Length: 578
Image (cartoon, rainbow, N blue to C red; front, side, top):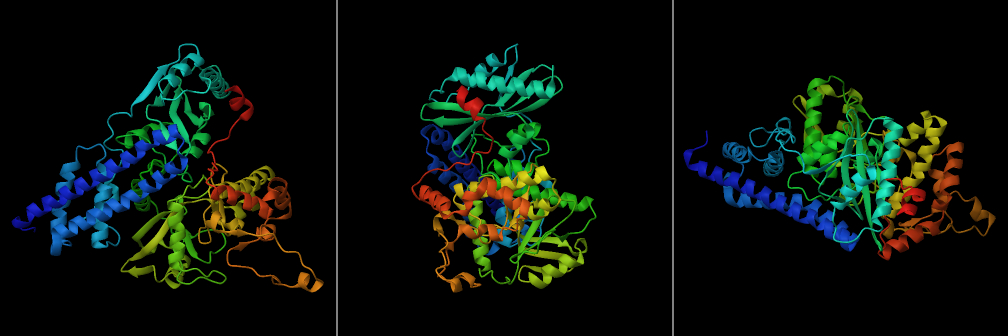
């Protein structure tokens, strides 16, 4: 029982938490609001820096709150009764707030650091099952809802006129004609004679990298589709670069492999409700993450996992595919994520340390993922019932990851792990794919390498097993232990042997530095069968030349922005018409 004399201190504690989150939220919005000016002024590198600053803001805010509370509470900083009272008071403070769930997540982030909690302690933190982000959403996100009155062109002209960037569109009439043509053709193809009733679009513009997006929905009496306009700020003004109308196209834009949007929204939850109306199968956790609320996305994923464990009976098993030398990977067959735990020791030739592996994952967290790097969420001190683990994965975790995994009572404790969306390993996919799906995957595998290069990422290990295939058929890289920046590599042409003896040697007869990379040798180690190898060479033979990589490297070092757009352009339609 908390003494009466300590209750004012609990009140102060709750107030510090409340104000700390308000400060964080103000900072988040201030950074997000810069995006409009970055787009108008074409400050692309500054926009990237803003994204990193906003990512780092959460941990900095939690750290400052922890320090303030330790100073306030002194020896009582780990007084459970005091914190239980503070939590009750905090709950009362935030009860009427639309974003109360974010406050709960922030509160728990601080207390987990203070108490170094294993699993969940409901006395001093909010249970994931109690954090339901969309619960308090009672009003819709502000939108423009325009009725279709016989002409799609008039409708879209009216819509575009409502988005004023302070700079001119490049030939607005042509832009409207292009968008109207795309919308009418798509709607007729998928919905026949059914008439469009309205278009509804979120008033706030979504910014991501050098693009701005108008995000909305097309409705009829019985059907709907996403409606997303990708805007580009060119030398001649703003133009409509693409129109995204299918669920698949919109899903790729809001993918777990993309960097975060910057949107001027007081609360994110109401926008998530709208996004779910156009992407009903997209996990809420991923929508929160791509909207920049990574911690809330993480909380939502954990909540989903806890709910799923309580309603399922299958066991965690070793993930299909080749055994990794750095990570032990396991999954629950009925859930759509994988868990990755760093091994205590790495098999040769892996020579990095645990710290170096964690630094690679931290790099990806703050780097533009360009649609080709999976979002890896870092979790600490998780606990699961031992009986939910297959013996093979339990033995692997306890014997090979003992520094991270141990059993306490009936629970397996994971001191540290990464959680990623589950994909089919590319090497397994190619074994069972039909010829056309196989061709597309091999071509996209090469494109994934190109896209990563454009974002200043060299995967390091290009083996097929380190790439996965999503439900949309996109190839994504997910093994980060040898990942590095293109600008830090040294791409060399393969020296030619000058004698028969040199040519016949099993090892290199020339000096090879630690950072030396010989692209000509890639094809020998990719693991492609004959047919896949031919496809790869047809489309991506230049990836096997040092000149290709040096050119990318030089452009990056010169400060050039090599953008990877998250959609397919139609140059014969869009670019010619505008």
